Length: 143
Image (cartoon, rainbow, N blue to C red):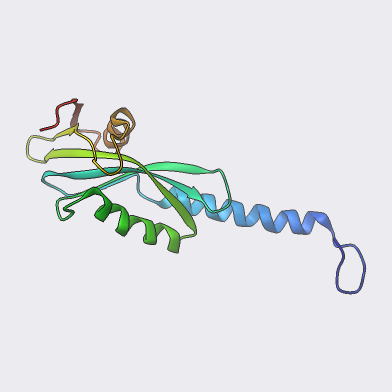
């Protein structure tokens, strides 16, 4: 690479800047909560893969709310928020969550008509990590 005056630029400075940017994006990715769901009730949820733009560093997140009539309504809120952080999103599927905060239980089940069934085992692991004192179960029931 040549500078404006025709002299070679130090490649370590360019790659160093890229490295700092990549580290900063990875830090941003790490700060995104793995799970954000409503505190109570039965509602739709989606499993989303969040990737650093133009990169291959990613993580999967769970998002769910009873305010969403359809699974895509959740994605339509998550995607722009992640893009604002310099991330790209892909919905990996959906289902439903039954959250009983008094009994400290979460049940993952069902599927999304539009996005297909999420890998509930991934969702369960994310939920267990976020809700360590909960009983988290999964079933193939649709209701």
